[in-house]
Length: 186
Image 1 (cartoon, rainbow, N blue to C red):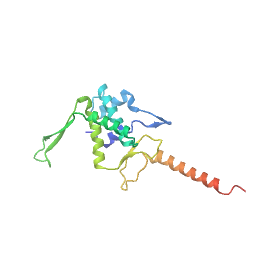
Image 2 (tube, helix red, strand yellow):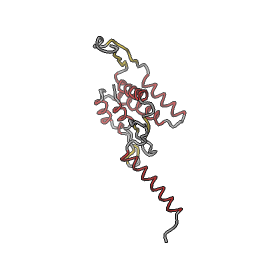
Image 3 (tube, rainbow, N blue to C red):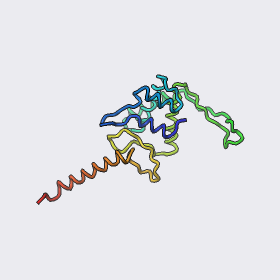
Image 4 (tube, rainbow, N blue to C red):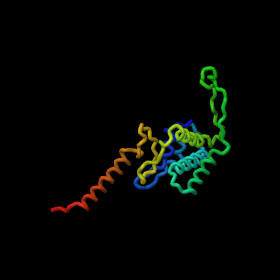
């Protein structure tokens, strides 16, 4: 199963670089490499198509603009990825030593399995850490953050980039306002 880090890599595969959105998963080799590193087929065109669809639906869900049509589209995308998928319980090898002795096996078409795991990783994060997965507070940024701070107050994907930029902009705006409304030079 995919973990939180793999989920964040997928969600953050469309950064803004030099003011333009860049889709790192548009490159089949890059996406194939990512899929291979996470137990996927890697060189399968259908797998890549499903991964892009899952990622796009999850991003749209997290951006949640409130647009009913967009929300319905994201939900429909997730429904397509998950259609016909099942998690089936089976007695595990460590039945006598395990707390439950049950292992859950994912039944999904091979080319869709990794995309399903991506959606399941997202659902797991939403359940375990409600309210902690969110878009960066910089409206010009397309990245997401998973807030692990105790106070759940993180606002930016990176303090180094987005946080500092926004703080500098606010400071400059306050300085301009003070300069315009204050006394002029003598």
